[in-house]
Amino acid sequence: MSARMLAAALTAVLLLAGCERPPMETVQRGYRGTGMEEVINPRLKAAALPKHAVPEALPAAPGDGPKASQVMQNVKVLGDLSVAEFTRTMLAITAWVAPNEGCAYCHNLQNLADDSKYQKVVARRMLEMNRQVNSGWTQHVAGTGVTCWTCHRGQHVPEPVWFKDASKTGSFAGNLAGQNAPAKSVAYASLPNEPFSALLLDKASIRVNATAALPGPQHGASIASTEKTYGLMMHFSQSLGVNCTYCHNSQNFGSWQGSSPQRVKAWHGIQMVRSLNNEYLVPLTNQFPAARLGPGGDVAKVNCSTCHQGVFKPLYGAPMAQSYPALSPSAP
Image (cartoon, rainbow, N blue to C red; front, side, top):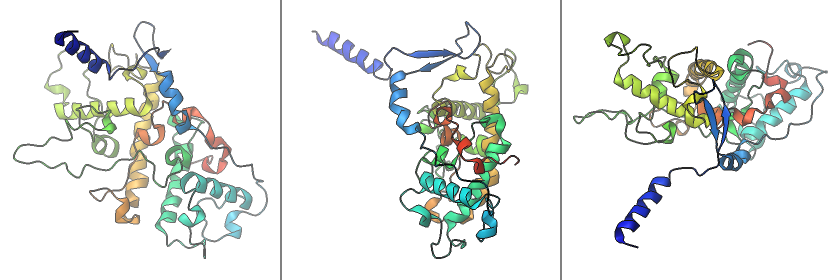
């Protein structure tokens, strides 16, 4: 084999190294002939199944008898449960978040009513957040709901969280603004790798696509804001394991009429994430020790990956929350 042929063969191998081998599975998600489909690699899906496995639910507990708030002290969130159901819920949360440390991770075992541990203060607020998601954001989670396991998966802190980019400072040479620094958060694209502060914490406009040909200055979307939007879209795709046409009709990305129902779900998800970050997580900043904060001193925050972790429905849609009614109150 000549050197030229060898070089060509090596080049072909390198070019194909980033591709996934067939066969693939496809599911139609929109109008015929538009390419609105979900592409699934069955081998990657099979390899990821253990990550999304749901632990077996604890045996049901009787709902009658005295309430937890009548028997125990300082029960501020789940006091309306029976003692048996309260205990069952606490055991489940322990297994989901601190399986090795047990109750001592959050509680002073000499006085369970004591609030001296920051973990207990944070956990109480996270319980309120979980209940709010299941009762107040049904436009996104529907009847499936979420539990602590959805995000934590046996860890004290969910693995997919984000912090503000503390290194985002300019110099005489300019400001890269997170570009050309590939990161998993935006599927290793050259786009800004921290679009979340502007779009999932603040309420900057995500919608940048024009609705008319040759848009002029009146359209109002800058190149910088457009790049952040596309970085966020890459994050959506990576977090859910789907492509753009899972939500959008590529004929007109800005049109809602031609989009799939999943786009409406995603819109509610964006509003939900903004609410959780601003109403629940950021206010807890001062409760955490410095070791739990980011490089810039900010608290860990959520994005789509925190729950979805690579699949279009967290835990592949397993209705885990239905086994734990304490996490799904009937009203916010």
